Structures are given as structure tokens and as C-alpha cells.
Figure 1 (cartoon, rainbow, N blue to C red):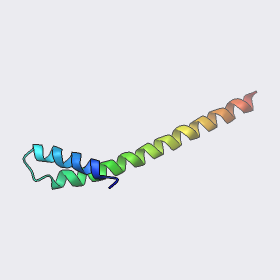
Figure 2 (figure 1 turned 180 degrees about the vertical axis):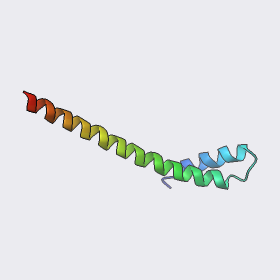
Figure 3 (figure 1 turned 135 degrees about the vertical axis):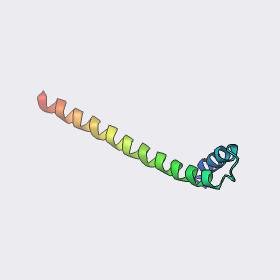
Figure 4 (figure 1 turned 90 degrees about the horizontal axis):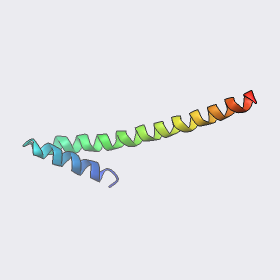
Length: 61
């Protein structure tokens, strides 16, 4: 259920090319999972950078 939107969008895009939509549904499912993973890693990197910068500035003063 959580990847239903990505699957539906991928199938609709694939059907526009005249295909059955199965390949697009699979790609949409994978892409929605990949986007979630990249967003989590990006958030973790941003928080880590903020903590590192705060610690570096506190050490200088």
C-alpha cells in the first residue's frame, strides 16, 4: 500500500508509450523506494553536518 502511488504513476507513464504498463509499474515501485532512501540519507547528512559545524564553532570560542 505504501508504494501504490509510485506503481500507479509508473504504469500510467508506461501505458502512454503503448506498452502494457507492467514494466512501468515495477520501475515506479522501485523508484518510490529509492526516493525514500535517498531522502533519509540526505536528512542524516544534513543533521550530521549541522552537528559537526556547531561542534567546530564551539571549539573555536
